[in-house]
Image (cartoon, helix red, strand yellow):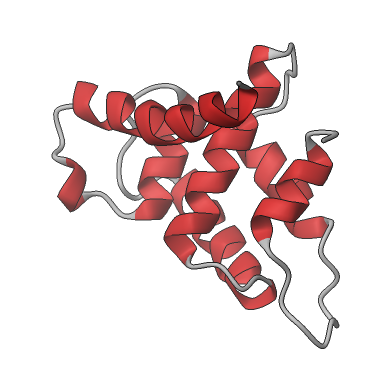
Length: 122
């Protein structure tokens, strides 16, 4: 059952947040979307957290076999999952820990889904 909940949350949470804002989703970068979810409020496109998420996504994209979009989606889903279970981590803190959990000097690229599952204790 929980395997069905996570994909549903992965699809619905970002859509609900983006839909509820006045800025159309197609104008928002992935970094900006993550920053809005992290802030739980509308923030400007040039907010410092947008640049922090861009840096995190750049780093994770270099370490993972997944696309930038998939990395963002998995991060938001895993963060929402942990939050429902009482975690106080922000999305930024979760993404930072995810990035730090993957060594820079690997000869292969990791699957972000496996790393997120490990961080969720599954």
